[in-house]
Image 1 (tube, helix red, strand yellow):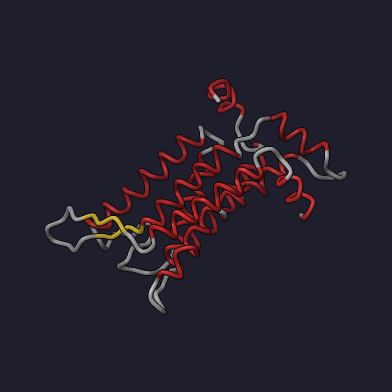
Image 2 (image 1 turned 120 degrees about the horizontal axis):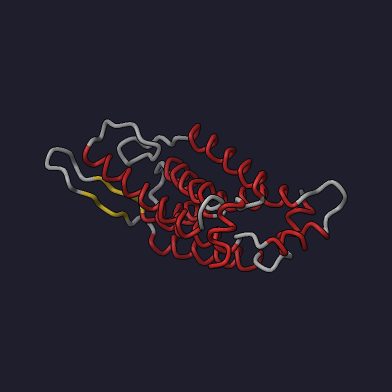
Length: 212
């Protein structure tokens, strides 16, 4: 595992990924406790959506773009591996990183919160959105994956505002309970998909590879 992480960090996009993560965490820290308020219902109170979750979606999209596999890059990494490692293993590790790194935006905001403020549910939302981006990216493009995640995030916010009792995969201020089971299942499925496809399906490579 140490070798795999070293190989990824020595790849061309490894340093760019780290710089992007740090920059987006700094942006998240700057936004602090800011939220987007949705108030479309005359019957129910407004719904607040943490801006740090939006930062996580943007980070996940940027990282997916930067880690989008070019096959020569995977072959180059595979050539430096000891016997037994394959590019699919590297793809799985980078997928896990693509889920975990965007969620670091949430801890970056924690110092701005009042003492004893629950924030684990926001972390769960961030991991969920990042997993959605990483899940869809191999099937379409990273930008399309980020767009789907963004629409899903706003859609869940609107649904919470219009029907607060509706179960949704994204938690809200009214619940403060993260959907950790959903996050875990989605993350596992995503990592397996990346391992099987090496980060991109053949169909997506044929359809979109020439435009990247």
